[in-house]
Image 1 (tube, helix red, strand yellow):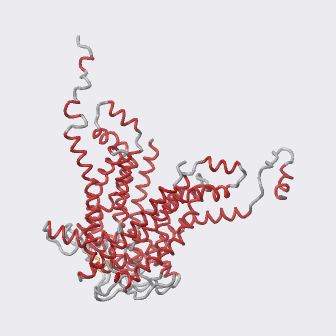
Image 2 (cartoon, rainbow over the protein chains, first blue to last red):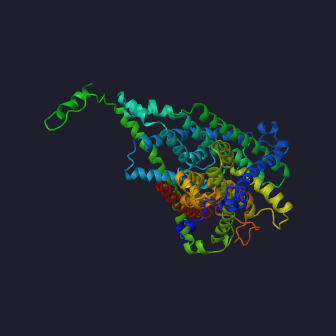
Image 3 (cartoon, each protein chain N blue to C red):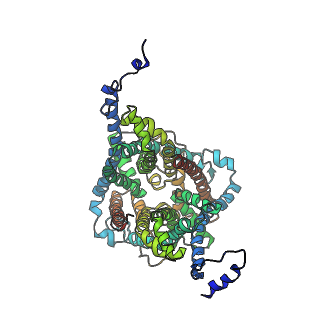
Length: 300
Length: 317
């Protein structure tokens, strides 16, 4: 009588051709998933190269020193560059302390079982995915409520961008705080420090690199964002340097949007040149963030 | 200090344990600091309430003039003409086209990249590849818009492929938007796949499966809820994306029949309408917020679905 052993085929049986790591389907699969990544990288390279080719002619000192003009030869992005600096600096001042404070509360002090804290957590996750343009509408309605006539002011734009990146800063700060080991807190409290002293003198200093990295990345997102500012009416002809938080402004992404929409080819070159500048700034900010993370991050 | 001694008095009464002598001095400032921290956290809730109020109040004004059914089911959108019509279907049709095209690009590319990073790449290779992929998420959307308009639409689609299309199309906007959300889909799916325990892979390998079979039949199903969450979050980003569609999809609000036509999405309308000067309290001004409310509600729904799915995959293992 045949035993059950005979009906079981030897393990090596199917390995031969179709099942090993080197079977044709397996290789095609590997090729396909590499193609997915390769296509994305190729897209990125083409984007950067075409932008540089389009904009290299106009990437001159004129771009930095001149004001927008009706002819592409004389136009520059000086007010837009200064406007971006003003808006991003104001955003940073508004949002980093607020975001860090909220994250410290959620991570160190909040009672996780209390419903209000669970609502806050869920709310932060949801806010992170609200479309940017909705924050523009929020700022527009808020300024209208205050009775502000000219809504295109630095503080208005900074308000919209602050609320936009607040969830990002909260989430990254929470991660930085969470990575500080419990033993540090216990050690501090065993030495008689209060909860807040522990947070202020041990936990926060240890998580500064993580907070800085997260904040820089969030601010770089704000730097490239145009939609909320568009709603506030930032697409205006600004021929002066912004000089305060109540000053009118335009920013680099808005200026790029404006120039891209013009029919003359010269303006499209200007848009590409301003894009090179914007991309360069973002690379610098991201590089700084990565440097801080690698150089200062403590491995516990 | 005295505070401790004062407290020590009644507490040492019979039946209650004496307080620890190591309690330290009272720091009244701390209560204030903790209150400030709590207020900072409450700001996030106030933001949501603010968004809801900011969108609802002008929308109520809008819906007093325009019935909700006409808004939701009307197929003509011309808020600025003399005989104004407020049917939002043209905007929704353009949004569906750009989002759909974006997903056709982002889902296969993102999932392929996620499988490669999670199942095939060595830790070293992953450390190199992942940041490069993340750059795609860091490119400003207005630069994507410029690229979609001047290169993808004008050069690739019209010159190279020779498609019969105008200066704008929902196809170009959708294609570029798709690549933009690849990192979103890839990085969340990769997290979900990496969270699948190694024991499942070893078990699969022990049964004779190769890595492709393990990835497709074991890891992929096990990580499915995380993958769905990634895709849903991608949908939310595509629906809310503004600058690419404002630049490359065009500004004519008609029901879009095929991807080579131009069309105005919900976000595209808000961006364009904001360019014109709308008087506060006018119907044009209120229209912005009505469309904004619809956009917010759609993304809110989508986000909650995504958060649901993420929770499920976090709890699974």
